[in-house]
Image (cartoon, rainbow, N blue to C red; front, side, top):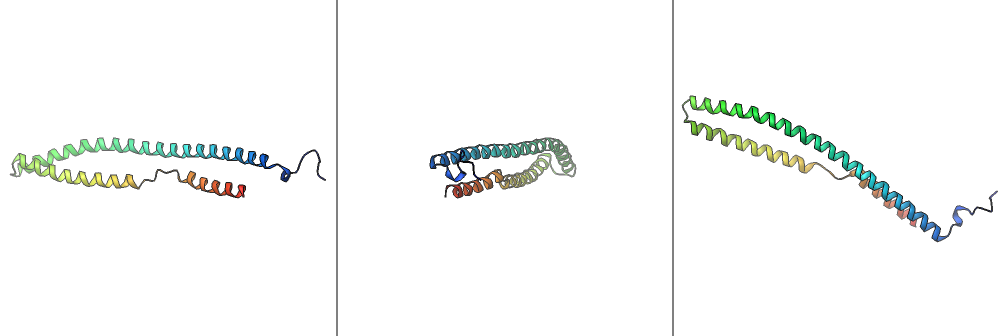
Length: 135
């Protein structure tokens, strides 16, 4: 038996229904914004950590590379090539290799998807939910 003091859920006025819908949409938007911030923050933290490791590894590798290049230049000079030609040859080879590495790294960065995919999917679901509720 239904209590007459409380109207049934379906007996709410249009104004009450729109008020409820507005509150629900507002809550939903706030939740989506929170999710987007969390997802972007997580991706940024991971990217920052990876960039730090890349910089540290690059600095150490650079020091080793300089020593190897000096030895190579000295070896070519000892083999009879003039010192300037040894340095030029090694420099050109290293510059080409460096250019290829930079190109490869840039392509890898371009392929990283920084968009908050989970948030995008839930926003699509929420839009569908709102359309269903408004109908």
